[in-house]
Amino acid sequence: MQENANLFVEYGYTSLNKFGEELCGDMVECVQKDDYTTLVLADGLGSGVKANILSTLTSKILCTMVSNNISIRDCVETMIQTLPVCKVRGIAYSTFSVIHVDKQGKGVLIEFDNPQAIYFHKGESLDFDRQETIICDKKVYISDLDLDDGDIVFVMSDGTIHAGIGFVLNFGWDRDKIKKHLDNNIKSNMSARRSACLLASACNDLYIDKPGDDTTVAAIKLREKLKVNVMVGPPTDKALDEQHVAAFMANCDKRVVCGGTSSQIVARHLKKPLKASFDFIEKDVPPIGFIDGIDLVTEGVLTLRKLLQLSEKYLSVSDLTPKASDKKDGASLLAKILFEEASHIEFFVGQSVNIAHQGLPIDITMKLKLIEALSDNLTQMGKRVVVNYS
Image (cartoon, rainbow, N blue to C red):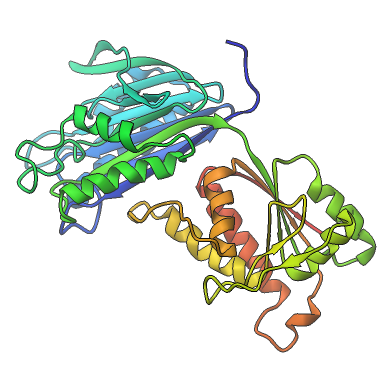
């Protein structure tokens, strides 16, 4: 297969704590290093603090070792020698699933005692060909990965297959039913995080909001890159307006302008009219605007403040609300573009002081802090983020 430079690996996960526990006994660690993405889902023995410690150690150690191309045999042996022994059970134990894949979709899946991974390919849930190997008297399964654009790999803890036991199902949610649920509900435009949340939310429903076990679903998706340029504010020197807009307009798939003055500058540069909507769809988010050639035009600081709140909610691995919204306010529309569609995001931030903000609790420092916080959150989502100041 010819290499495709336009492919990108994204990831996401959602966790449910066992009912009554403050800490989750499952842990997910992900590292993107060079051309590879390494994701580890570990499930510690039992629940609560001990399980959390076991899974944290396992995920961090394995992720570090695998991402540095250390052999799986050495990795498993290291885990056995490193994990603290449970005084009650007399064993040190954490199950794990490891995905190590490059940006062309080639890599390896390593599984130890977690439910078997699911390969979502062209709208259908499939099984990987697995090779069994014995390491330190333990069965470890290894699968070669060769993913296509749009493919998703789901890994999960055993809370998924236990979902519903003693509640709405006698014997839990078996793997075939999980696969059928994915077949019926996963759409091609869903992000990895949204897909993982969808499955975890279904498990929570079966538990009737009281999970009987820690439950985690993690997903990795191979997808096309989509670069979004976002202009926020004009530069300090008006003489640089044209240069600023030209850089913003170049080399991207989608363009977003935030702020009234910025919108006027872009409209003037493009020689296109700026049209404003007067519909307050959400009372705390100002209306959007329209410029031909620009995918979204929003107000500035207030919309960005709302976007930051939405990003924190989106990032929460325990939040089960849908990761995409059909709302048409500026913040929701911008969230959809940046959280669900974008793989690469470049901000063009002008540091000019807005005269319209005089007398209001809004200043350039607030805007810069908003951009910094947003950039951090977008990076945590796995986006590639660049910020340019002028």
